[in-house]
Length: 609
Ligand code: M6R
Image (tube, rainbow, N blue to C red; front, side, top):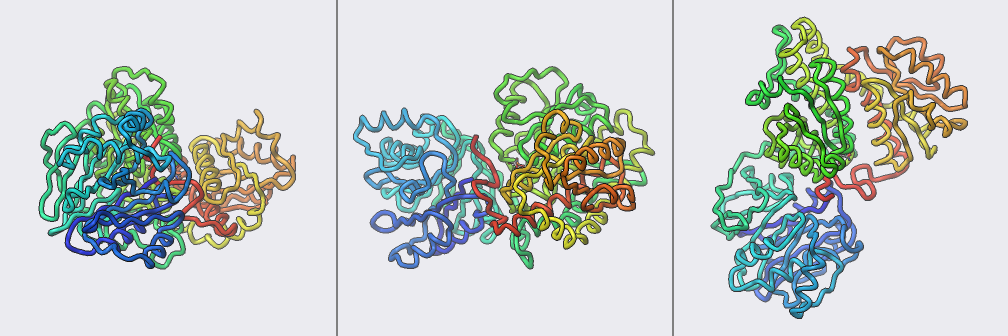
């Protein structure tokens, strides 16, 4: 999604803003632009494509030597990917200049109103309407004009605004799209996420919805669009620069797949006590009673997070015996769901900023549900608006294809299910056994990762095939969905995931000679059923790639290729079986020559509907 960086201080802003945009590249974008305040107005440059294209254009430009500026990476929503549609946008009189993330839903009505007042529009964007509206309402006070304009706006926004009449002022605001303010000494860095801030300062605060901040080099004032004063909660960013750097890896996705053992050790650290059979989750304590008494859980999320939520359903029902449903947040939010007393709505999200998940959570809260979050990004919107939650602690995830966040989410959900299970029906012995198994997961993932070269070789055998199927049962049905999603999003191969039993109800018609069909066939309650499905595929010429439990001799005689995972208790098996699928997707994308970390059309954090 779009990214914003803004700077006000005493350093030349240009390089700092470009550096910030590069840190936001992972979010996904198609063009970039920058504006620096100058003595005569704004120096503005825009470029389609990578930030490096913008940098190249700036090399030939004069000016751009001011110390206040705003910059943007755009992921097109309204209007094509053209230089003209690139942010920053100004009004006709070049008085106001702004960058914007989100969507101004009533932009057409605003444009009509502005056109009657003589404004002319040069772009196809919704953002230009907002720049013109602020200019129209400007009466000597930029902050007041921004607030007045935002009171007229419906939709989502994070904005950073400059005005020629107030050269030392930067005004920013947010509703629905994240925006953070880094607080340095004599300088402020504003950005969509902390990765663009942390090189300058580790002190920052997140703007809340409807908050506006007015910054000068040495002052800060935060209030709502309705002029209520707000005291910002400045926190220490725990992000280290090396966590967001590539190091010796070729891609962030590869780095994050290989980081999983370390990441999950962090997820578990200090939270599990095998000797006592106890789970310690501080973020659940304030609502523990309500959670334990819950009559129903509803897991919501999108994409990979939804798949983790689906595994959460199996875990909660198995360990805690709490009836659980899973739903796309995007569906939940609009279908007027029935939320009965005793319902807990649990949002699963890496970024904590996914627009649909956030809105679905709001819908559930309005209807009286207790809300909780399984979130990675500390201080994100979902983390801040839920009643209870568990942080993943897997560190920043930069690769668009989610990997370590998925295993972090499943691990957090497992701990949550054990936490509630122990307070309901789960015996201490069973809990001790599961904790013991959970603690072996990082080492076992390391064993899977040692087979990376073999997984690469298997992938390369099939990488020319345009259609793949992924199948699993029980706890590994969601893993099959996740394997298919990973493959399609970065290698652009068509893949479908499904419960293995569903194959006979239609998809079996797709199986042709040599079609790669990935079965998650680990030893578990439904192993013999999966084996029967494998035979059905083989009988129709499909090539079976099995993810199987080490030591299984039977599978070798029916599968073309086998990718091994160590033995583990079945409820925890997705934490291992997903790893070969992540690696397959990675190696397929590399073999096809795709830019793994910047997949076509995708954004890391989907902050618009
Ligand atoms: O930040 P979130 O976990 O809420 O994001 C949800 C999905 O957009 C995300 O998981 C997406 O499906 C990933 N690109 C999948 O790899």
